[in-house]
Amino acid sequence: MSRVAVVGGGIAGLAAAHALATGEPDAEVVLFERDDRLGGKLLTTGFAGHHAIDEGPDAFLARLPWGTGLARKVGLGGHLVSPQSGKAAVWWEHLHGIPEGLLLGMPTDVLALARSRLLTWPGKLRAATEPFRRRTSTEPDSLGQYVRARFGDEVHLRLVDPLVGSIYAADTDHFSLAAVPQIADLAKKERSILIAGRTMPKPATGTGAAAAAGPVFYAPQDGMGALATATATAARAAGATLRTGAAVSELARDGHGWRVEGEHFDAVVLACPAPAAAALLAPLDCLPVGVADTLAAVPAADVAMVTLAVDVADWPEHLLPYSGYLVPKPQQRRVTAASFGSQKWAHWADGRQVILRVSLGRDGLPVLHLSDEQLLAAAVEETGHHLGLDLQPRHARVSRWAGAFPQYRPHHATRIEAAMAALPRGLALAGAGYLGIGVPACIRSAENAAGAVSAALRAVPE
Ligand SMILES: Cc1cc2nc3c(=O)[nH]c(=O)nc-3n(C[C@H](O)[C@H](O)[C@H](O)COP(=O)(O)OP(=O)(O)OC[C@H]3O[C@@H](n4cnc5c(N)ncnc54)[C@H](O)[C@@H]3O)c2cc1C
Image (cartoon, rainbow, N blue to C red; front, side, top):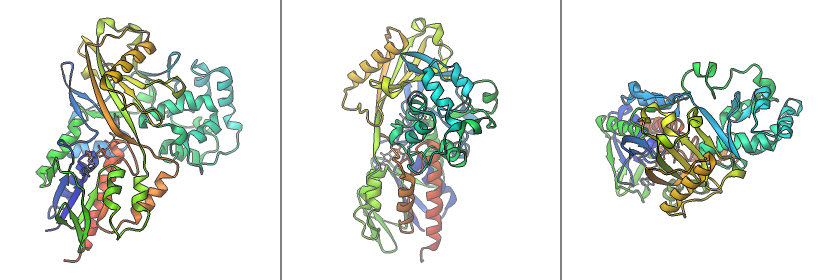
């Protein structure tokens, strides 16, 4: 019987273990997780009388097949819910509803942009010159550089950077364009985004026709932690062994296979963050020079998530249509975004309290040197200031996420693809550090890694 080790028990490791245990019933699959719980960034716990409020991700993109695919495979297909349609806003001195017709912050409809008060008139006029500009090279692979060149600094700073930056805790001036395929593909194909926008189906950022296209996000009714739990349960049912409190510090060649923590395995999936994978790979002399260094050099931004419950009676009516808001870089202190959780998710609304999830920190804005008390105070003070409220939370929770979001610097994918191609047969990488940060991309990478490992198992001499 062949044996496969999976290192890391976040969603990537769990999805890899599940794919291997179900796809290779004759192989013994052993997952090693350093922490005393499985799920990694997927963590849902009780809060303010609710049994399941997410501390990390609260949804995954519906448009990509891997999240829904895994949810169905592990029995959660009938338990997926979607956010209620609500308006997102940007805070620039006060709240502005996000204009219609944006593609991750990039305008595709100049009239909708003209109606918004988020941009100044010079900013709007600069954006309107986009169709008359020469093609912008995508070669520098910087999202910020591309958007500034096409639409000017205001569109970048007040729309694209807050929207994309809040998804990845990124400073998009230092973030890879290729890592945002919706924009990168268009940028490669079209000279002008606004001209292309005339014939494009309207992006699903609002309500009405866009909402009819189907949900943008899904989450299990019991939160994203339920996806990790159900995947772990299904992997175990298929025969995988999942060990917690089991950090891996040894990876070495062992004949045609590998030694992991003193045990022989025929293949290994490294589904831990890139720097942890780099530390395991660095001592291997069967690897070309530079592979471990490439992974070690992937930086990550820390974030904190502060969850607050405030009395419904203290929540003004004019905020009811909103799902939350983003804070652009020039206006940021510590808070980068706030989601009005109980307005976003119908099942979080109990009629007594409003639940807010406030995000602090990003690439270039460290926050984890602050104590929990300081993070809470910053969340309450800054959010209160943004909303013009004296927030008196009944309940509060601080979740600290060190290394929360890998930062894909320009040409990240090229470097990672080269590193992956240089790995010996039977060794594969999966997870957020490599070719996609969101949950569906992590699952895709896990399924690809499981496929590569399965192929290697068949090629291993008896
Ligand atoms: C606050 C927050 C909000 C987010 N929101 C969203 C969202 O709404 N939608 C979305 O799609 N994505 C979101 N993301 C991103 C997404 O959750 C992550 O990118 C994804 O869950 C990462 O999964 P992973 O398995 O690659 O890594 P992790 O979840 O980091 O798992 C890696 C695991 O490896 C373990 N490990 C490390 N070293 C070792 C070792 N030596 N031996 C054994 N185990 C080891 C770690 O303990 C960890 O459990 C969010 C992330 C955060 C932090």
